[in-house]
Image (tube, rainbow, N blue to C red; front, side, top):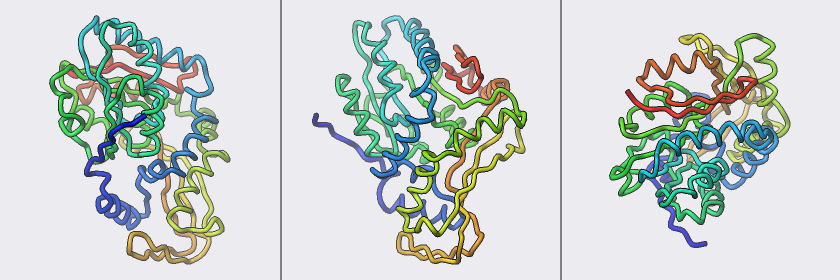
Length: 319
């Protein structure tokens, strides 16, 4: 396999370094650092295979396939460009494209991810569709013309799976609304919560507070130069104060001693007991998510939610 990979300006070294320095000064790590390197891509895959419903639950795979079938039946042979925002290893994209093979003409495919290692895994998996490959940080909010020369000549089907939890509704949803035209469709997934009861929250917290997850979180800190004896990981739940029916899981690293952390040519002093946020993920009740999308002018054309109300996938149109 020989593939050309395009790197968006958001992934240039100076841009990444400035983002890291800005984030650490605010005692947070950029979400992109959890996936970018070869080591972190591998640790994330280990965690996903152990805990992600799409890897463990046939019902979830059927959920996605049912929605894919509904979307494809409505396209009715119309030419379209398939854009995967945050493709990861391409597993979910493969499910969609396999179903699309029955069409007379296959879609043009563009795969996008912040991790070169993951996008190359996806390219191997999806080699038969001859995808364009773009390494890009979605937090930079690229316009569609930046994502491929001919994209705007076609109807776009944007697949954005697994991105809402980590990028968050304040950042991701307005961006998706800005790039989605009235002729386009968006396939969006969300991590759901049946209710906001303590019992439901405790069950969901286990998905983020486990050995595979801890190895993934710790990996990014070790790559930055910390030692495993320098910090202790903790996982807590926080409400989204401006919203009812939504909350987030936050993972932080508590410093066990005073230390200096040299990053990108600067040294950061971290005091004992200070906390550095490593990861966050939003959870929504189905009703709360519907309300938030409606507020942004995003309407659900199709909605599929798991019986346990922990996973949802939606076809969304604008207007």
